[in-house]
Length: 225
Length: 225
DNA sequence: CCTTTAAATTGGATAGACCAAAATAAAAAT
DNA sequence: ATTTTTATTTTGGTCTATCCAATTTAAAGG
Image (cartoon, rainbow over the protein chains, first blue to last red):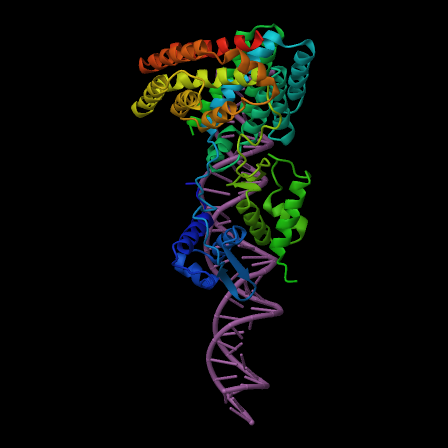
């Protein structure tokens, strides 16, 4: 569906190389020939070759040809790599736990200063236009981190920072497609407020529930795509 | 010498990204705009973007745009993200969360095979004499890990393995003094059995509660010294 | 066989066009 | 005023058609 042709071609060519059908140091057919062979335009072939070159699988010599590099090493494909990175569901499940508990802890034991920081982060996030900008995403991240910091457990903070960084990789593709709507970002703000209110009111259970409900909603979003 | 234009463009764009001029999650200008900006054809811009995408620096979304990916440290383990050495209380608090949830999950969704592994680990632990030997501690660790593995979340397993290794350092000195009794080790076995029973009976809430009660007991032990 | 020369091949880059899906703006309905 | 529909514009994906210059290959000449 969303698999682009140049990606498909790149994958097929890589497969040929790794299987030995195209041997190291050998020259690939000319771009025009490949185009005819794969029944696509030369433009598309060219884009596929760019991918392979960037993946250090071939080397394109100007006005000479594309040569298979003498590596053929790791069987791990650069393209459809089955990375060991945790999937969205795993990450969200972990976030649900950690952030939920952080909410609970900060509502229970949080100092005045820590709660103020959360309120400030919430305000700051709400003041950023809910557009798909780095500023908004960063403000949201900051809000969540401020809660983790209030938990007074350094593991919570470091773990959460790690989890927040994991939004890349092949499996997150659908995630990106499903969450980039203005409506979702507004819902995020509403939830932030809810969580903040519960923390300020010193209601640990409510704070945890609010946070977990939000992440459950994100998980359902992910599963539906 | 013969640096190709698309390589030059790719380099410049990457530089902008790494320098922070183009922030993570932000969208790059449209290909047509970039072409005008760099005074090259759209084809060339496109080839440069192919390179960046293959390098996992950006993600090109069909009919949407090219987005700067969050700076993802390649194959960075969750362990490597932890810098400071957490204290006993932090570790136990985290274990309480993770292991409790793992019990819940495995009791809820665990497969037959996974639950069998837990039962086996419990049996193995019970068969080791409750002395202060590496064998006993290892069997206990194995039991807890088997539960995490049943949660089907690799993050749980990885994190728990890390937490279990943290039993060294000055702050843990008191811990050892207070827990290295035969009575405690027997209590551990009793709890293991309790948790195992709850999981086998498919009672998620009870399983979680049993595990958390056990860790709460450990925490209280720590605090009393 | 070696050198020189001419022709064909090849990758680099451009221009312009079309399409379908996505994002946005405008209009209508509530 | 807000939500829902509906046009409109934007955007990436792909293709066709050229032009260029260096390189490779073939041909010609010695």
